[in-house]
Image (cartoon, rainbow, N blue to C red; front, side, top):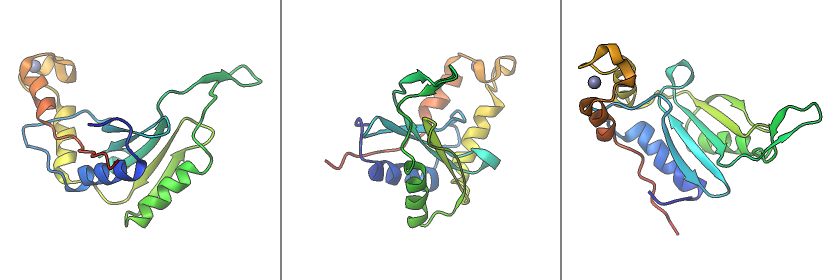
Length: 165
Ligand SMILES: [Zn+2]
């Protein structure tokens, strides 16, 4: 996957992955979803099973510069801009995806958009297989390190983001 593509191309790839991409029934993937790096020191995350088991798309600062506010608390010195989360939500609505809710945003280093339409059932099933843990070694659950458990992650299909430049 190329580094740092425009946000529009990343959204196209990530939405295609969430909604149109079928995961093999012998694949699994962890619940934090997939990341696509975009321009401007940002990355997007696409999570099939976020809040209420529905998809969540987040925009995040790739390299936060932490600083102390006047009370001495660590805060991001380069947070996302005030309009970034609203713009992401508006773009998703423009593409036909109903937004349920948004979280965080300025002055945080991350902002999330929850979508109403459930992800492709095979995406949800792949996360559920992860949560069930290694079937060969139930005692080790998701922390197993055997080849069979590792192979399931390798079989998972990742978003394909093509650089347009
Ligand atoms: Zn195992």
